Image (tube, rainbow, N blue to C red):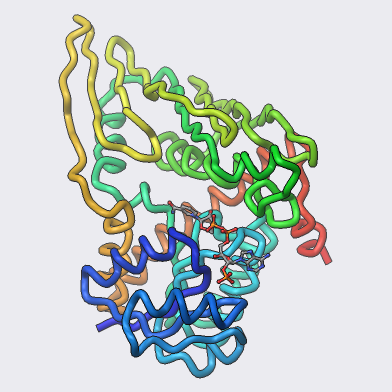
Length: 336
Ligand SMILES: NC(=O)c1ccc[n+]([C@@H]2O[C@H](COP(=O)([O-])OP(=O)(O)OC[C@H]3O[C@@H](n4cnc5c(N)ncnc54)[C@H](OP(=O)(O)O)[C@@H]3O)[C@@H](O)[C@H]2O)c1
């Protein structure tokens, strides 16, 4: 049975815990900045959960082999680093690092500790429908591009409009629409089409310079992929991948529920639909399979394959940000 600890006490951690517990994992340790928060959060999941407000103590004394990190983005790197140094496997929320310098340091640490596992929690990447899209695209004789849209109004935008600076709309915390929602679309593009030859981001910047929404154009030798992303408005548009006379329709590229193929006669055929379940179950099942067989060569290889995608996603996010002049304090620290 896998014992795990958590960092971050927001709703996403609760969703992760529910998914993990449903396949038999045991929550043993909760870290929070405040003891009252840690105790209240831990209390929802049983009486045998230990609580910590000191991160080194959490890693040194916590009885767990894997930590799930769902803190603000800018903290992912240092917390993952501390976890790996303490001999813990890591599941870290997307985006796993703020920039390629941090990512390189993580990869270096993994090379120094080859028995440890590190996963970026890109939940949609592990879903069966994500793979179905890839299979369908491979069947297209030619690809003529894609239009992918993921725009959801954030409740935190209300706080921003009221004058506050929530973490997700903060440069200090490596936030912004590209990092938060764009990361899903970047995963899609890299997984389905590869790394683009050129990548430019046209953000709509908010009063503090963070991107509230934006459009990224990824150029491939034979086509373009357009990413529309945002946290300041809702979009109900489906996304599309273009073959020659066929078009693949995705109801939502980051919350895939339905895939439809439109053929050359304009006939639609539903080729897949998702089962209603905890959105984090697919990734948790994947991580579970590996963590239960950590010494198997195939487990190592699988982590390396996912890590290679994470590294490319991290690289492309940085490239897009830099094309739009968006710099995080984490970038300056990382250069030192
Ligand atoms: N996979 C998904 O579907 C999904 C969905 C939502 C979010 N996420 C990811 O999950 C992560 C957390 O997102 P979130 O919206 O939950 O973030 P958040 O509310 O800003 O912070 C998450 C947790 O981090 C701690 N925290 C907050 N402010 C902090 C600060 N200034 N310094 C140190 N710790 C702080 C808090 O825990 P304590 O008060 O207990 O310390 C809080 O519960 C992000 O990386 C995001 O991208 C993923």
